[in-house]
Length: 282
Image (tube, rainbow, N blue to C red; front, side, top):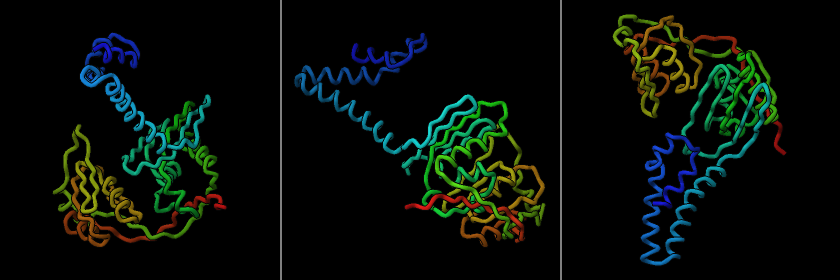
């Protein structure tokens, strides 16, 4: 019991921590009883080895996590703070949190990060080094100044310095698609009321499922799935439910037309393409 309770010193003292101490250190209390049993039944050495093995397992997990993260940049000034880590954890989920004054990315590719900072679609982003684009990062940025409009530009500038890349922009005539309403009555069947539970978007190899979402959410999912640039030209703000089988672009367009009364219309537009140029590897 004492073995477990002494671990309460791992926490910063407060009355709440004190009240919850039996729960917080319950694993150590149980381990203490088990190690005590081994000590009495089989001798000191086995009890000691069990304790060492327990600690080694958790320390090992910590070391493994450290090996999968390589710190690229860690800077804090009076105006901002930024930390960039390169990750090598293919099993961890990717998360993106964007706020006016901060950015918190976990296990996100450099390409996706740059597309956000440059306010562009990933399709319009090219590079001379795809391996660099595929690097996954943990990015934490905080803009401490009162001007939140500078959040992206400061983060982009620090990222450019860290990876020594330059940015080139060209305007090129590009094939795009406009999502338009063909049959409002058909689309109206899938309209749903907005509520406090929010929306749901699920994309898997077989289908796209969108619940209680605006057309923009559908456009974003279609753009990512088809790797084409799609613009919402429906000019409607209502929420809808959509379920589409992912069997190629033509199939998606057919489902939109006959099931939902929508259609993708091909257009040509002058679009700004951005090239990220990394130094040549020696």
